Structures are given as C-alpha cells and as structure tokens.
Image 1: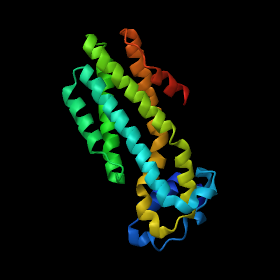
Image 2: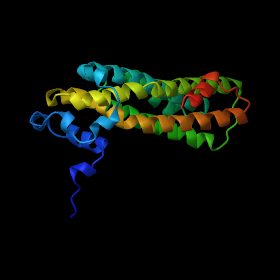
Image 3: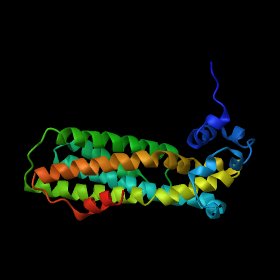
Image 4: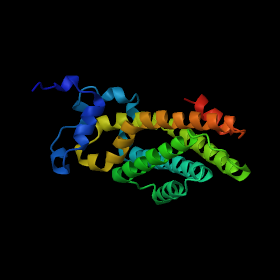
Length: 222
C-alpha cells in the first residue's frame, strides 16, 4: 500500500488527524508549530496567545449562526406544512448552547442538513401558500439570511483561531476540538446556507412573497 508523506498532507488533514488522537497521545506530541503547512490556515500570529478564548468565541458565533438557520428552517417548514420537521429543528436550536461540544455541533449540523433538505424538497413541489403561510415563510427567509451573515462574519475569527493552533501546546488541544471542527466545517456551511438562501428567495419571488433585505445583503457579502 502506498504511504503518503507528511509534506503531502494538507493542513486540515493534519489537524483532523491530530485531534482524533487520544488525549494521552496528544500530550506526547510536539507543538503544532512544527506541523508543515499549518501556518497557511491563518495570517495573524498576534492572536495565538489566546487560543482558548478564540475557541470559545468561535463556538459562540457558530452556535448563534446555527440557531438562526435551524429556527429559519423551522419557520419555513411550518409554512410549508412540515410540522414534524419544524418541531425537530426548533427543539435542536433551543438545546444548542454557547458551551457546545464538538459532538453537540455535529448533531446540530445534522439537524440543519435534514431540515434544509426537507424544506428544499417541499419547495420543489411548488406548493401554494395562503397569506399567513407566506408571512411565516418570509420570516423564516429573513432569519436564514441572518444566519448566513453570521457564518460569513466568522471567516476572519476562524482564520485567526487556526493560526493560534499553530502555537498551541498539545496539553490544551482537548479543549480546542470544537473550534477545530468549526474551522473545517465553515466553508461548506457558508456554501450550503448561501444555496438555501438563493433557492428560498427564488421560491419567494415566484409566489409573490417579498424577499427580505437581509437576504440580498447576505448574498452580497459572500
């Protein structure tokens, strides 16, 4: 079997492999600054001394964005008659807290994906909505756009956190898994939610539902 050399591994793969190790094994590893290429993930060494604080701030921001998306999907699902999906998305949002672990974030992302897919599938059927349902849908679209803006605003903090990881002691790595997970997930999260905003806006336009200004602003920020 062909083996891949360290220099061929991308920074994200190196980081993922490191965080997957048992805590005892992590404590015996050298500083992350010795990993090749990790510095390319960020651009400011000035933030490296407060990597734990950066982790916590990144988690809070990501949780806020995920809650917006989940509540948005709950509102849009409700407007489309998807009561069970709406209830699940809302319950997941309410359970998500600023102290979320990597596992909590993974679960919330699964809920985001499931509710997004349910809404998209129903939209594809071109349902007709009454006035009340249109108003609920519009509220959901506005909340979805707010979530997208929050994701976009996490780009720079995520880069700074990634840079801080380069200097982090292996002893603190167990406390940084949530932030490292977010760094890996954020690009896809932004792309997926942007697609949702575009599709939801197109459905709104075709059904005489005013597109909230937040939706236009969010897409312009990409």
